[in-house]
Amino acid sequence: MEQQGSVIGSLAPLLILFAIFYFLIIRPQQKQQKAHKEMLEGLTKGDKIITSGGLIAVIVKPEEDFIKIKLNDDTIVKLDRAFVAKKVETGNEDA
Picture 1 (tube, one colour):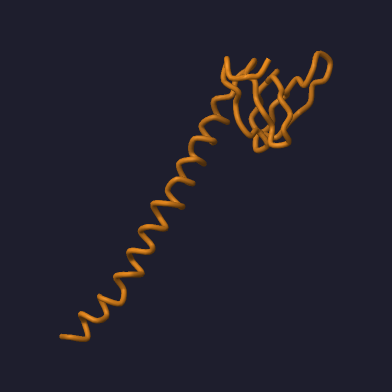
Picture 2: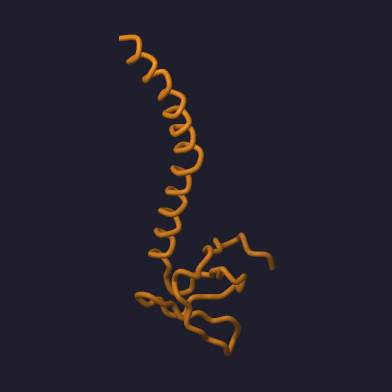
């Protein structure tokens, strides 16, 4: 009986360490990925975005896998949705 207690006692620190690891690293990262995916799905024409390369652009036409963005008055390019870093909310952009 005493060996069973020692096995549980030796596994308890590992379980506690895994629980801490899960709540501090894995769970927040999953929430962040879910929020980013929802943001990508909710992009519409006229939204202002920042690409992962640091370019600020306005969406011209959202498509299934790509989006057409306008970088300035006469430059329109096609961008993979995976390279959208974040959406700039109205009022948050620097003038």
